[in-house]
Structure formats: structure tokens, C-alpha cells
Amino acid sequence: QVQLVESGGGSVQAGGSLTLSCAASGYTASRFCMGWFRQAPGQEREGVAAIYSIGGSTYYSGSVRGRFTISQDNAKNTMYLQMNNLLPEDTAMYYCAAAPSPASFGGSWYPCAREGSEYTDWGQGTQVTVSS
Image (cartoon, rainbow, N blue to C red; front, side):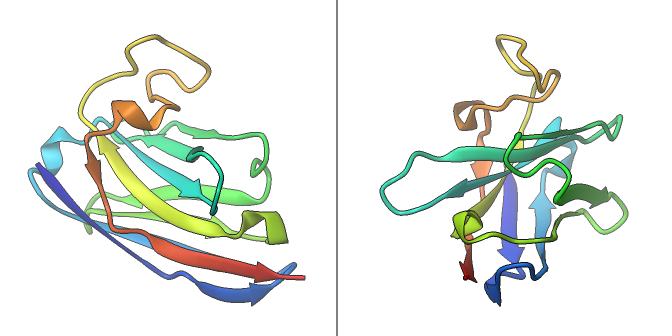
């Protein structure tokens, strides 16, 4: 099992930037892919970005591609999400998650999964609020 702790959330104005961090501990060797998800009140959880822990390939949802960058520092067991040009619609609770194996059904993010159900370990979340 992997323990995940997010940090770096906050309140910014539209056009601003934030960097989220996700520190991993425990059985970190089980992280096949790491992902960032977000959920706004009344909305479904959305996969934002993922990174293949071994190869370093990255995947993004269309709504954040070109604005967000996912990265990892394996020496520090930490994953990051650099968020630039933030929009009010980016307001949500952001979660990091770890998946122990490749996506079950392929998909555009393969070998990572876009569905949260494929991730077994989750952080507690960090709030991002973007005002217009």
C-alpha cells in the first residue's frame, strides 16, 4: 500500500499558477502509474493527468493540455502538477492517486488508466480555488 499526501493548493485569480505536490511513502514500488484527479461540487470526478512511473510518459485531459504539466522526482518519491493559466472552471478538490498495474481496458492514456476506479491508493485532497 502507498500513502499519498497532497499539498500546494490554494486560492488564485484567473491566469495565475499553482504547483501541487504529492508525496508518496510506503510500498512505492507498486506505483505503476500516478495520476491527478479533481472533483468539483456536484460534478463527477475527472482524470486530469497521469504519468507512467517507469517510462515517464505523460497523459492529459483535453481541458488542461497545454496549461498543466505533470512530473515526478523518483528520488524524492514525489509527483507534481504545475498548473498555469488557471481558469475558474479549474476550481475543485485535487487528488493524487497510484495505480499498481496497467489500465485494464486500454484507452487513450494507456498504459495508464484515465478512470479513477483503476487507482487503488488516494491522497486526502487539496483544494484549488480560482476566482475570476
